[in-house]
Amino acid sequence: MTVKRGREFLQTPGPTNVPERVLRAMHRPALDPTGEAFRQLALDCMAGLKPIFRTEGHVFLYAANGHGAWEAALVNTLAPGDRVLVPETGNFSVGWKTMAESLGLVVDELPSDWRHGIDPAAVEARLAEDKAREIKAVLMVHTDTATGITSDVAAVRRAIDGAGHPALFMVDAIASLATTDFRMDEWGVDVTVAASQKGLMLPAGMSFTAAGEKALAASRGGGRMARNYWDWEARLVEAPSYRWFCGTGPHSFIYGLIEAMAMLEEEGLDRVFTRHRRLAGAVRAAVRAWGREGPLEINAMVESQQAHSITAILVPEELKPGEMRQVCLERFQVSIGGGLGRLAGKAFRIGHMGDLNEPMILGALAGVEASLRTAGIPHAPGGITAAIESLTEAPA
Image (cartoon, rainbow, N blue to C red):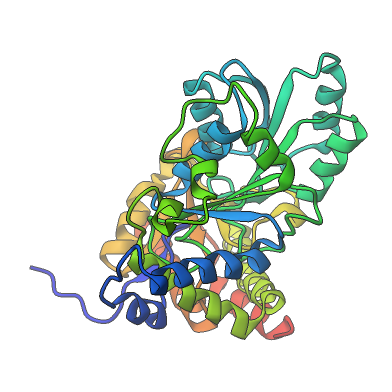
């Protein structure tokens, strides 16, 4: 049996590291789900999330992963047979599209090469063609963790407005919330989908939909999809408070969420975004250095679209990046992600979001560079030096 010491570095694009403070906060007995103490905790969570989403809308909490929040957004606002527009960004836009189709929605997809963000002009052109206003919603992924691409939410909102189209605007912010600047109300987002296991620094298993007034009004309309657990209307009742969760609430997650929100408030969201940007810059500096002598390449081709939360690195399939990932985990105790969808077997992914600092990033990058050498993947040395130079040059 191989005995490993020290701590494994978790650098997947999710789940992310759960801080000790959050783990300790979660280690508490459950409360009476009908009692005032739990009711107040739930209210504190809903109120505390609003500044993170930057919304005055209502935030719904679910004991589910991000796919559950995807479904909640769709079934509360749309009817079977409704048409939705999905600009492709990678594996997760495809996943949301596939879910929409399974629920009886008709999907128009704007295809992409998985190396560029959403083209707002293409969105506006497609909506302008919809003279009958059959498209009821635009479904956008802000940061797609399969491709490491972040698209411009505000620009897509301007495209919708430019076409004079009334479609609801839904944004998946699962990998961008609390890692990247996101402004739900200012950018005219009607529904935001998010989850616990990324920038919010919690274990996987809790998700959220934040709904503005236009979306709430749509949820009250006739002909909506059948729903029970996901139903916003049932969760808006004032009492009993356990109905906010369609039954017993996820107590441990709520304890942890209170602590995670306190940590974000202590640091300040703008500083959180700056930290993520700096750490992402170090990762990209290392990848560019490795790629000077060899085939490694950042997937996202436009620098301004390179995500602050995850970097996808292209590797020729014949070099077997999956085997390198196994070396990275088993020999050097660094866990990184593999390619998904079109990039399966052709990429690896380094997550850099959540509870993370400079030494953690440098240690993870050292493990990746050692794994590249061990697995025989051609690359130039000096990735760690490039990452250090990036971090020391960038303002703290």
